[in-house]
Length: 250
Image 1 (cartoon, rainbow, N blue to C red):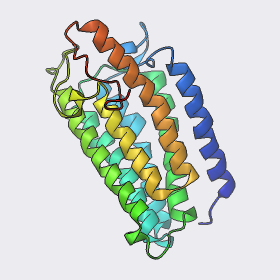
Image 2: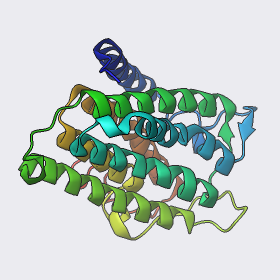
Image 3: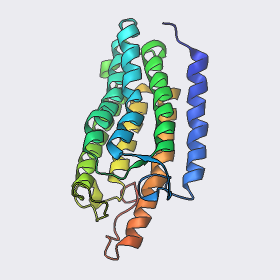
Image 4: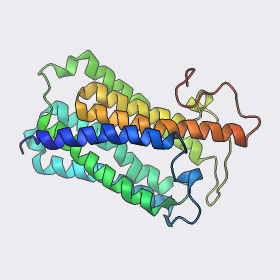
């Protein structure tokens, strides 16, 4: 398959513009799902909602790789598999285990569209457009990017585990998360995911991967801030030394 430069460029800029719009929208509220869900919203059970909205970002690149992956180089393929690893976890591990609130149907639908388009963008770009030098394996920037990605993934998974064990099955309560990166930030799971996609963008060093990392920061960074503020208002004994999403800074 030939590289569709126009589609890659258009989708990348759409992520940049969409991320900026998301940042402005979420500066006013934490996003209409989870603890901020609007009363009367039509919702799906959390496990089903998360699976449906996240799985396209795994399946679309997988389909591209099965059909046309043989034409791509090792560097792009390996980066694509790191992208898919995150969404495999989100779809097949996190989703069935989550004890979160039901997800509004409109969020599921919009996230499904986003993950489908972004899955195509990242998959097509890495398999058919990205160029890696023969010595990419020894490149310090790429190695640092992979390391950052996997550190972020570990933080993300561990933070999800902590949050999940704050509730018993069927409970809808909020407690102060403790342990791991939660000792430093209220949004430890968000911090881990931001690290993942910054590392991914650093390793790939391209507009589509940077655009996705930027969109992630704009969409979940403000959410971490709203969680932080909600914890402070909800719990009088909430640790004052914690920041919202970036340890020691913000």
